[in-house]
Length: 353
Image (tube, rainbow, N blue to C red; front, side):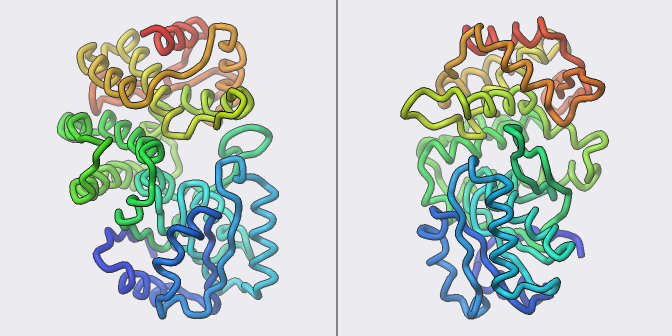
């Protein structure tokens, strides 16, 4: 059965139907410490989840590691999970990534359902079949492609998010707008994310998911077109990984979406200089990002370390740094090989504008 994405109107009914249509002798629910407190109570009383066992892991991307994965496998085994059991991933992208990988590998694969509770997970992590963990200091270094049976998207969960986490997800939506069409991009530039209308947000989320669905359906294993979804991520992943070890004392590392937003600035500039992307559209998008996401705290002394992180990106070939760029909104150019000089000039633009 292909993955079904449900935009929820009645999560109690929809979850019951999804469970009934998926093989399950036992049900396990994976959450992190935040979603266990804020989101699990909303669904824990559903009759369809009677007897379900809650597994709780630490929150934060630093928990998306081999130790946490091993803990989930162990909890499944101790809970009597068989190859006919089911895992429901209730949480943000870290939970759906790690939970999807745990389900895909336990007993060579059990059914799983994603219920994303963050904007980032709704528009990105829970859709498209990518699962995995961070390993050796690198983002998503180990994982598999495997779709959940269902994704249930309920924007009511977003009311529990602070503005930073809304913005983190919104960066992926901006990316989807840039790689799709002028109308989608313009609607995102016009939306007031600082005071969101959640009814309108559901429309934008549906649009954004549709962009990703179209691309993933055409290229499920990232052999060609799906590389469009990497726009902003070659630089973004390096900035995110760098921040894990260089965050100022007392401050948190960059959220994924913030790193992607800064990566979009770098890759939009390169799109202008290399591919003729319209300068006006670039300036408008960069202005939106700078006004909402602020600045990234890097200096030219950090460039070599950032370039080295980019060399480890899974999308590279033969040690070269490859990137997805745009010649215009919706006009995607994949496999763009970058020189070290270009990369450092893009970081200059990120820092100085």
